[in-house]
Image (cartoon, rainbow, N blue to C red; front, side, top):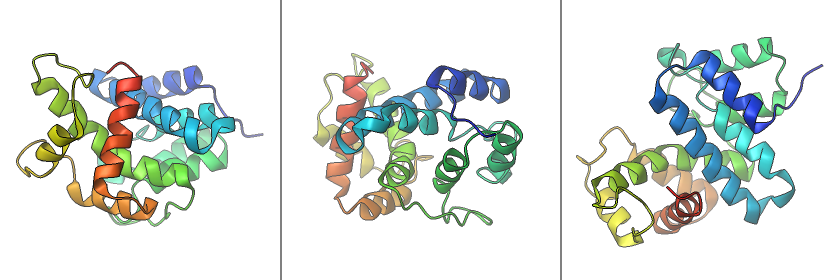
Amino acid sequence: MSYIPTVEQAKEILMQFNKEPFHISHGEIVSGVLGEIAKKHDPEKVEYWKVVGMLHDIDYELYPDQHCIKSQEMMRELDIDEGIIRSTASHCFGLHEGCDIEPTHIMEKYLFATDELTGLIGAAARMRPSKSCQDMELKSVMKKFKTPAFAAGCSRDVITKGAEMLGITVDELCQITLDAMKALGL
């Protein structure tokens, strides 16, 4: 019988397969951001959104070339709920061969859109004297977004496609994500 882990259990599972502090931190940030966004869009399922965020990169450290493919197998072996498996795998839609699960639920679309964006905003925050998002404004995020050399590993195409999936502008997506990161105290 499959189960839905708690956020704490999801973190333990993430840590079972990921040892790099960056990967653990990224899972926590995406989990938190999705949780903040869920408060508006799906308040009954905040915990569920957070679990998906925590587990979305479960396979990345061990299987970067099979990311979102191996994760499905790994989570099935752990008897994790199929909905979580599907949602986590959807954030790689169209990014490499074999990733054909399209984000359809609003949570999946936000995961797709904010996964890369949290990295860009986090990198921008680390450049600030405060090392924080707390005093950051949207114009600062957009300036960094429009500078391809800044946080070059964060795909602007994915962020843009995610905003399009959600039916919002990149500016709106950046503001939503920045506000969520501020709410988390990042």
